[in-house]
Image (cartoon, rainbow, N blue to C red; front, side, top):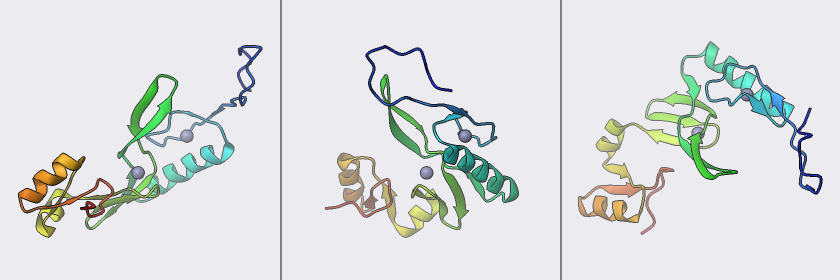
Length: 132
Ligand SMILES: [Zn+2]
Ligand SMILES: [Zn+2]
């Protein structure tokens, strides 16, 4: 395994690729470690056995050869009474709950100010109260 088609002067790490045949929805099909493949199978198994589990769809930024790309988090997420939370630490709260509790997500400082002026408590996308 591995890529032998490299520049002879290349002295970076050798990338090994392991094909993953799990049916985890957000898996790209290749991993660099056996542990990652095992993790995919674990997540797929948990989700298959319990409908409260699903792949986290939270968009995260990754560095690719073409720059920054946004992909779905893909960690194991679980439905909670308020929304969902995933193993990577994402917490999402449903719109009804946010409304009832009087707060809203703000993506940037401008949005946070707008919410604040409208009498709604702004919180970061991670759910923390926006630092004043
Ligand atoms: Zn996988
Ligand atoms: Zn996540």
